[in-house]
Image (cartoon, rainbow, N blue to C red; front, top):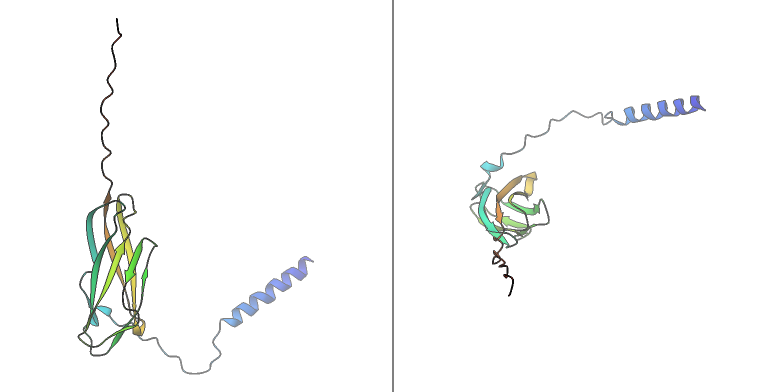
Length: 155
C-alpha cells in the first residue's frame, strides 16, 4: 500500500511539472512595461488628510482626475479597501484628453482614533492608482457629573 501511494504521488508530481511547461511552440514575447499613470492622469490629491473629525460623523472629499494624455481613458472601477469607505463616481466614464472627472470618497467616521484608508481607482488599459486618506476621529468628552455631596447626620 505504501508503494502504491508513493507511485501515485510521484505520478502526480510529474504531471504537475509537465503542466507548467509551455507547449505553444511560438516565439517568446516579452511583456510590455506598464505605463506610468502619472504621465497619463493627474490627481488633485492622492493622499488626503481629514485632520481631526468627530467620531461617527461621516466625512468626504472630492478627488479630481484629469486625463493629461492624448487618448481617451475610462474610469472602470473605484474599489474601497473596507466597508467604512464609500466612493461616488460615474462608472465607465470616458475621459477625453484634457477632461476632468470627480470621485467623491466618503468615510463613515467609525474608526477609533487615528485611521488610514485606501481606495484603488482602476482605469482602462490596466492602469490603476491607489488613493490614501487619513486622519483621526475624536470622541466628545464625557460630561462631568456633579460631585456627590454627603449629608451630615441630623440631630
